[in-house]
Image (cartoon, rainbow, N blue to C red; front, side, top):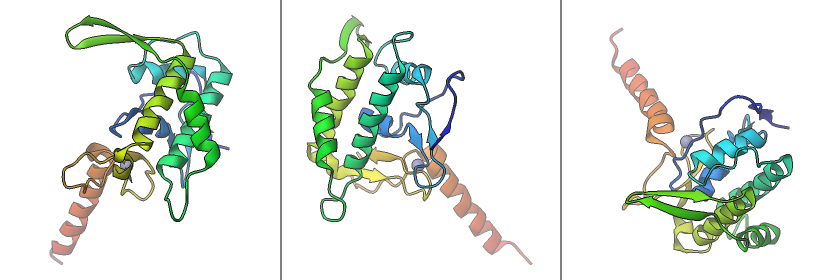
Length: 193
Ligand SMILES: [Zn+2]
């Protein structure tokens, strides 16, 4: 169904949403046009977990874990992008997130001031992400969840700006593209001839 990135190349994941659960949701990109599955296999999932700072689970991830993480991801995405009036959250998604959150979470070792290292199994990572999803989706910050203004991006983020007017998931990529396009438009309007 989705174009896969394969399970051999190291994928550089993106963490720009301001929340772990929405960073997970971003591992299926370009959802409305050409979806790309970044969690294509166990190696991708262990890379995401490591890059998310949740520990080193390399060699301990199976295909079933990938399947479960994708299920959790889609439940989070649907719930985070739900609309109470037009597209209410699905009861099954809320149950899945809650059930997953009930598990034991990853545990930290405080190594020094400013540095903690997290340890656990994939099961514990799932519980940790689901737990954080409950905090976000069940608390006041759910009102700050936005979808990137780029028409194709489909990434969600938490708008922590004081004005509540953040438009882009990432100023460098989506915001940068929009600024460059606006600049080109202005230039072409002002160019002589
Ligand atoms: Zn974006």
